[in-house]
Amino acid sequence: MSVFRRIRDITVATLNEKLEQSQDPVRLIDQFLHSTRQDIAEAEKLQQQCQVHSRQLKQQVDQAETMRFKREEQALLALKAGEEHLAKLALQEKLIYEEKIEQYQGLLSSSLESLKEIEEQLGELRMEYQTVYSKRQYYVARVETLRLQQKMNERTGSYGGGHDVPKMFNRLEDRISDWELEARSLRDLRRMGQEYMDQAGESVSTILEKELARLKQKLNNSGKE
Image 1 (cartoon, helix red, strand yellow):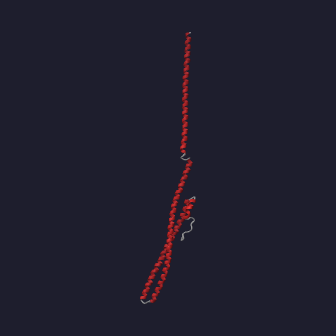
Image 2 (tube, rainbow, N blue to C red):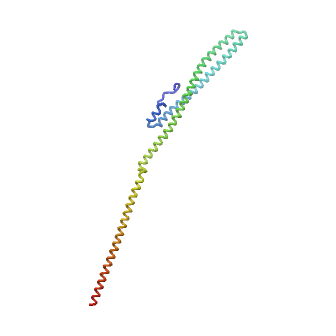
Image 3 (cartoon, helix red, strand yellow):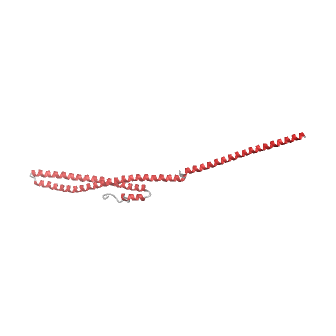
């Protein structure tokens, strides 16, 4: 800015490019906002100084115009009274005030132009600040989103991820099925053993009965002899 603004390390024209390359965009934006706040403060201070100076110049112009009108009236009164010498003196002072008016009006016009320029530049600075501040809010939200995604990635890595849960239950289901199959096999084996023992017991009983019957028959035969 031509009147007051110092050269910046970061300008709006290069800010977007630097943001895309920066590892810490929020910090870069904060630096820009800090610099812009300083420029706004300087512009506001200069605006106030220009306003005061313009008012002072306007007062000089107004006073000179008042005195010019007054001296012209005095010159007319002097002429009416036949005091031509006094009329000339009044007119000489009138010319001095006219010159002063011309000079101060030139200064006032220049001061008002500078004041207008400063006000426009101050408006641009404030607009820049608001625009970049809004961008800061976006990047803060963007960085927070990235941080949360990283936390989620870390959590997924630590716990194996939600996609492994079905696999985990599938493996558990397989183990339980194996246990159930083993238990059924043991139960069937015990049942077969018991049946075998029962069958074996029945066979022994039959043999014993046959042997007992044979012995009885033998005794009967011996008694008959």
